[in-house]
Length: 83
Image 1 (tube, rainbow, N blue to C red):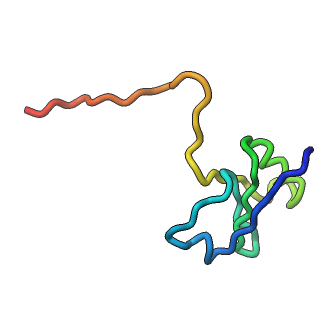
Image 2: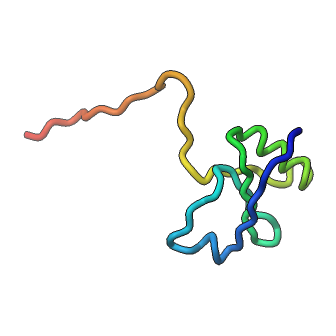
Image 3: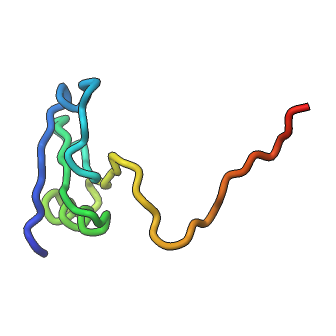
């Protein structure tokens, strides 16, 4: 596995109103710090976490909405009309 870059953020930094996540995927470790994994693939982030912390201990979370791949599977429409 290639080297994965990480950024560790304290709870105080994370809870700041103007906080901007440095990467898409993260975990909150037992120390209360947030570890952001700089990769585009959830599977790669989870594999790195499993290797570093042990399999099954942490599940990767997404800090941002991810773009879907391929065609849209649903669409929203207005179904009520005003009378």
